[in-house]
Image 1 (cartoon, rainbow, N blue to C red):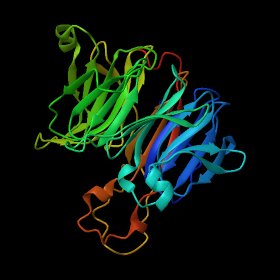
Image 2 (cartoon, one colour; image 1 turned 90 degrees about the vertical axis):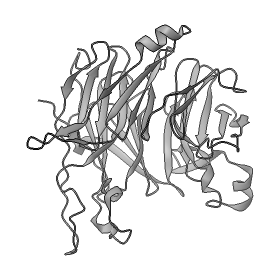
Image 3 (tube, rainbow, N blue to C red; image 1 turned 60 degrees about the horizontal axis):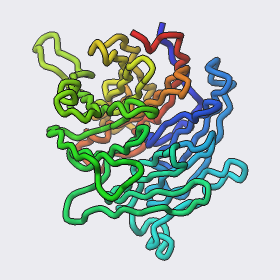
Length: 373
């Protein structure tokens, strides 16, 4: 019933870094760790993967994050700390902003400033980039001029791991479970810092709405999703907050749960529902009002065939992890990126990379009210 269409992608596509839809015309952009940027034109909807236009672009560094500004203007954040705009006509990546030391010393000298996330602030027409080293930068997309550069506090471990934007707020998750919340009009100091006290690594963070200041969701490697809300009244804020377990499988014999990381989130603000994707190969849909799961889509399986006779017992030949989710701006399509994250379980760094399962991208045309309870 819930079928997905696989898009045409390279047969050796590396782990997917980011996946997002354009706000107009439904272009889907996928970036991967092997320097690829793939663009699928899904403006005609989902029919068959053979008649969907796609283009491949090669960057000089892995592009870890992508966002759109003013229609289909495509901006990317690189592992080298540069912000780039994709030039579709010339198949090139135009430099929008770089750190001064990168410009003088060349690409690859300062990978600690690699950009984890780029977001578009529609209210002020600017890009906001968060780096591994904890720095925040904003660039005017009209002039490609840097507006500000907020350097991280070097006395604390302030590495930026996730970031997203709501109507007037920027939510920044730093190493651990500390959340800095900034007013987009003033980046001098956070208006609030929340210490969530989570015991495990956060995998994803998203704003519940980009048109209001409702709250945000985050997922962790121990199969949990937490919902946090913005409210001036701390009692109301606390009463709305909740966490739920997901992407777990109970052994029928022992009764022990196998817990999978929840790698990706996507939200439908109209119906207040949430998609989750995990390393169990599943995508689930949750009703946040009723606090329950309303759909579980079929698992994503790989078609892996070993390239050698070496021991490959470390690989899961059945299920491929869901690492990225994206929902079209008109809620008409759901994109799913799957990758082989089995390298996390390798017993040795000497395992041949040829045994890695290629990443894949799938699309589902959502039926009316599918995101509703």
